[in-house]
Length: 335
Image (cartoon, rainbow, N blue to C red; front, side):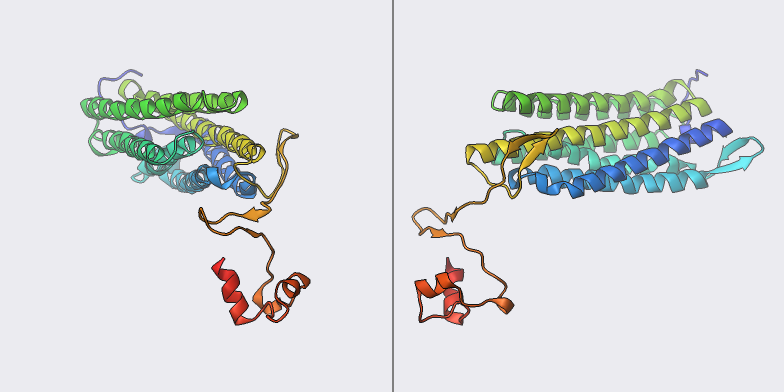
């Protein structure tokens, strides 16, 4: 029903069907995020070192989100008392919502790092963009938290409006930072990489639109049905943004790694495949290049010291010096 003042959605009683539906989506979302973490961990070697920050950010996003859903599930199961055919919220019901903002305070800034890591910005430019995007996105979430749980929790709709407006300013700022970085990158990338980067950006920014829409629901409506709608919508949005967006960024990182290998700008220890199509062959450098003007020497494998023995190559280089002598090891380390 429409109301003049706000009522916290976690204070609404739930029916049997609303309670089990909400729990179902909480568990499914948590499992999907954990599966995303496992997949990211097992495929971490597919991405070259140049784009490793995107991989690290994605691992952190999925790990933090998975843990937050554990808190949400535990909080949800403890937050309601079963009375007849109704689930009545108790004093701990706020924990069915609060961990989401704690999750977003960490994962949303990391999502901006994930996107910027596969753009073509470099050096001071990428550091500046990351700082602005991370700071703006954190303030976007934190001001929304203040409006929902600190100043607007007593039903004052004006506080929701005020802090929602402040949060929207930071939301617009972060969008501008990310869009500028992506627009600078698109002309430099190959058509396939550019297309995937564009799709990932659209998914991320459109997914972010869902959260402010859910934020304003308590201003206009209250009840178990609306509380269930909020919970289900946020679960779906979290999976789409954190898993769908992360998958697209992973493909961009793989494509750009393959492009660097084909161009001779980088090497990779294994062949790169995307959708059963080989993008680049595996390869190791035949030479190790030191600082400019320094000597270049062949890249040779050296066994552990405990099992080292004189090789034929070492004997040809210097038959009088064993390969595992202290003097020779010191000389080899200097290179």
